[in-house]
Amino acid sequence: MRNGTGRSLALAAVLAALGFSEALSARPPEAAGGDDAYRFAPAASEERELTLSAGAGGVRWSWSRPAASGWDTPLVGVRVNATEAEPWVEMSSRSARSKQYLDPGAHGLRWLNLSGLRDQLTDAATAEIQGHGVTIEPGAARLRVFATRVDPRGPILILAPHPDDAEIAAFGLYSGSNATIVTVTSGNAGDANYVDAFPDPAEQYRFKGYLRAVDSVTVPWQGGVHPERCFNLGYFDARLRPMREKPQEPMAEMYGPNTDVAVYRRANIGRLLPMGPRTNTWAHLVEDLAEVFRKVKPAVVVMPHPFLDTHNDHQYVAVAAVEALERWKRPATFLLYTNHASQNLYPFGPAGTAMSLPPWPGPEIPVEGVYSHPVGPDLQRRKLFALETLHDLRLSPAEQATCLPPGAAPKRDDYPRIAAVDYLRRGPRSNEMFFVYGRDGVRELIRSFLAQARPHE
Image (cartoon, rainbow, N blue to C red):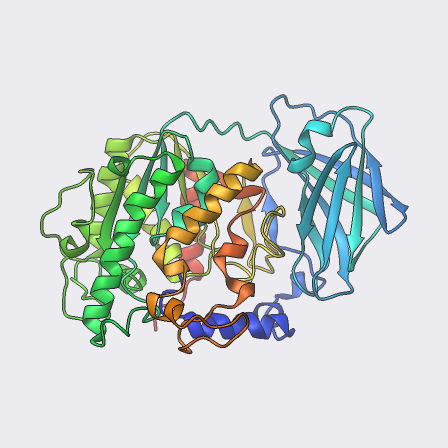
């Protein structure tokens, strides 16, 4: 998942931890007070004004039943001010407890996810928030309650930019469901994990891409999704954005002259799409995704959020998917995720804690809905070991063979293992977080993204 930017992402994480955050310094004027730039659709949730009473180290309020039946995701917007490097809050109601960590230096409006308390949030219940390394302002606050009604039994299509994205974002969602998992690229770029075994860069990345393509169709079986319901399209890692700028032009891999995605499609067991020669072009990618939509007929499409996920490949998978919608006219619900937010620090804090909305300083993002999918302790363990199975998320054989003592420097400087950005920490959480859009809403979101995207440099 580091995909060509390992050292820069690691450096960004270290700088962010030290307070040198490019994203924070570039906040637009409207976000200068620390507020996010989410703009919730008025009819998408039940909205209430709250008055938070000050308590010992935190705040509290009285809960009343939401009007909508079947509600699933309550968020409370509170104003915070971090006083320590790792601020976190404990939310409670009756016997239920939920921990959520905030971004370092959190200041201003933050949305806290109360879905872990859902079973205890009944009439006459008291909800409390205790701050640890962060103060929470009493007084006016806002509650939003979403009734998303996502049905995991219907046909679900998971779109992953790289091998491992489906597991990081949605292992809990797709486990045991009627899901089809389509990975767009083979993951044939990024860190030179296997340079010890393959000194030639082109050979090393060809091997790495095939190995990761195999991962993309076999690891979902740990969540009950059979390899025949998985397919890797074989397009080339780190190429999607320039491909769109020249949609008919075949584009070679980063480290060799090959333009045929069939080199990686041979990793597939299923036959969702043809396995023969196919050139690496944007036009072919959009055609393939349109055919995937026609064959899968998904009621729910899970894919990256073009604004919140800052990886180019992730953004342009969303663009390609929406372009493919022009050739597939059925209605669907779109669940959008982010695996690259807040300089790869999000979600914050240790594994097992809750995740909510990432802080977003702008530009403004329309939000039609929010869905927090619960992931229980057993499923979190299964997700952890599924992530550990993925080759690109663990140490290479050469690095494992060195048997370094804990805390020792890695053998190579292009393979960072920094806890702050490690997916074995960030992935297994008590929930998975999705932004919810209808067909028209996701198309408008992509139009807005493309209007603000700079030409590829």
